[in-house]
Image 1: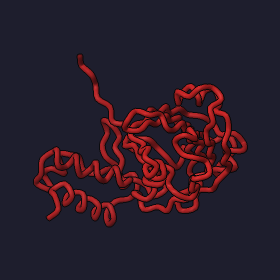
Image 2 (image 1 turned 45 degrees about the horizontal axis):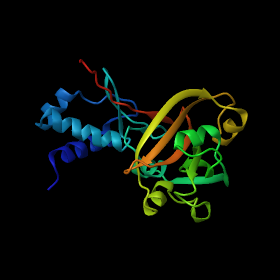
Image 3 (image 1 turned 120 degrees about the horizontal axis):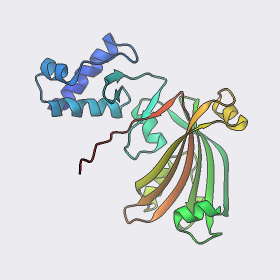
Amino acid sequence: MAHKYEQVAASIRESIAHSFAPHDALASERELMAIHGVSRMTVRKAISVLIDEGRVYNVHGSGTYVGSADLFSKTPKLTSFTEDMISRGSAPSSRVLGVARISAPDHVAAALGLPLSSDVTQIRRLRLADNTPIAIEEVYLPTSVLETESLNLGASLYEQLRLAGHEVFRAEQEIKAITLSSDDSHLLDVAVGSAALSVTRVSSSRRGRLIEFARTTYRADRYTFQLAVTRDDR
């Protein structure tokens, strides 16, 4: 038998499919509690499931709204691009822009705790969802973690790292707004100088080993980041 929160999530899914348009507001938490006869915790867990699926998004201090099919929303959970797209019912794919074994740039070596000029694998890919360009990804991996020759560039990189015994467990990310260069605008099929989100990520394994430096450029009109924050009153 399904848990209460799963039943509530299923009911909201059905309502969204038949009665709501993208960006319509859902009922408030209090109203959903009354409609379904459940606790606030159950409602919040159901909404969390729907956020993870990309069906709804939350605006702090305003409410919960129905998602749009052409906007992908990323939650703080550590997931790969492939996992994100599959969870939202889209088909992920990649176009390889370049792959090479190179000496690590100084900033990459510093971020990964490598000696200067250490060998790394550099991978540049255009990431697509349902054949629509979404992001440009540039990844650097220590060759001691994953050899260049063993890569399957058509498959999930995180899955390959897991199978190699280096599952990505933790990542520190920096997100900033940028404008796209002419070349990147062409790759992402948007006007030159369009807004984008640049995400720099340094990832580590469960044992604390630094295993990935990545910089991903997302189309700002197709991708958002959802972050939940709390106030420390100490």
